[in-house]
Image 1 (cartoon, helix red, strand yellow):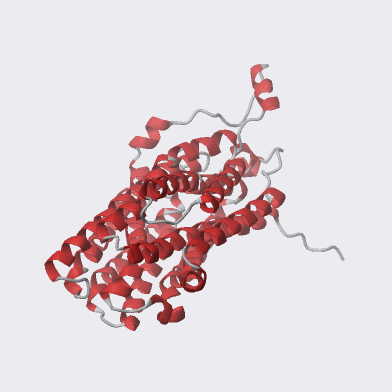
Image 2: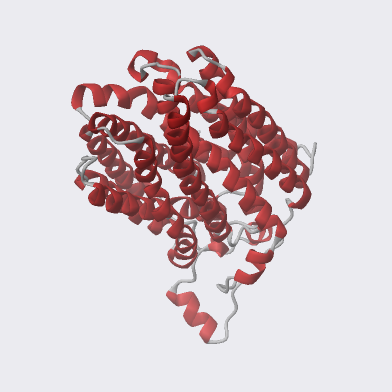
Length: 442
């Protein structure tokens, strides 16, 4: 009896899942370690917000270049280079809140390096994953972000307590190096052969960069089933692309505000200790992990069983996710116990993750050949949301602290959570009006 062969595309999806998990352990880890060090040094909330948002400036700058590089030289190579760069920076970074210049430069470098990751991942998945598996493959890959955030919230506060904030950076660098070795050893491009069905469906080797022999064939009068010219103008004026961009902005505004400021909300808004909260503090991110995969499975089921069209499936899941999340965000400050706050933030983040089965997979629906490019454009908007949201939240809290003397009152946090709640409603309406599940870029 012949042994069942484990499909290579499954291994690629698993490795990209682990990559996003490691990246978000790093992001949550910096927030936790820096918050502890900054509080000990007496750094104010506005200054903390500035440092925490610095990462996103670098991240924003490299999104579109990351998509272009993945398109030209291959997502597999760009992804490996990104991990090596940010892991090295974490290993070399000294955590001293008083050495602001070094912190700013280091966080910019980590942001630039990690900005290449998601455009590269979307390029790799567009090459390897057939359309009927895209929703759950992308959902599984991106759910690694939430599992990583949950693991970071669970384990890293204890690591900071017993080994100090600097130990977090060393642990993150070690994880980055280990993943890089796995990717170098096991990842590959799809076999370069003729796949007419794959080409028609919008995935496979025809999405790979043209190599030297193919380029020479073209120059000698041969043909190729694809072109390397990127339709930049059509991408930037496309309403379905802008529907994705707006929803990516909103998703990341809410996610980054909660990721960077939820520890402060627990400790100063509710007067709780992260160490004493135990495993409950990881529940919002664990919920994201669960709901992200539920969304992917449900979307693929609707599409493959022809219950709904691709367009209706994307709009349905996006709308449900964002509307429920908006209600949870707006009511979050009303809950004054750890159980209530954990429940409300878990619902908000869980349904935001469910909504990713709408807008976040839509890149590959409308532009499988340029998935990395479109992802880079939309993720730039998501990164700008991190810059605006994290920094603005710091300023709102500093103002609230002046007005209410501390951050323990619900009024101090109303604006913080109302803004992303309102954005969720507006962006879901835009997605309903302008998105499509049909391929519009050949």
